[in-house]
Image (cartoon, rainbow, N blue to C red; front, side, top):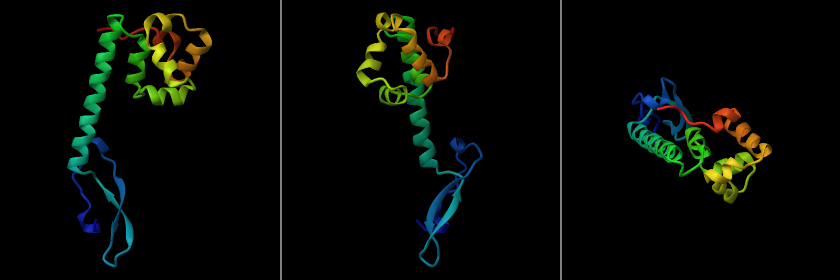
Length: 133
């Protein structure tokens, strides 16, 4: 992309900030150029955020019905998935999946609960509860 072709679409997702992109200047060398956003990127970002919000709402509804543990909601509300929560908490992925079952989660020892609390940056009370409607 040439320096004068860098998009400047004032993206909402940038929240008034600029992003550094690299473009080719007149002499053919790469140079850093600030961009205020690109409409296509903004659209794709909004779709991803909407999808994450939908997954979080579904997890909240499932947790309220007792189909999954509150961990499922808190994991998604903090933008973790099973793989990233596993990596951040030190549990294996199969363990995180298992802890999403309400009966298993309710019996977890304090040491394991504390690992989730530390990873998700929530208190024990918050981890075991769900937001009110």
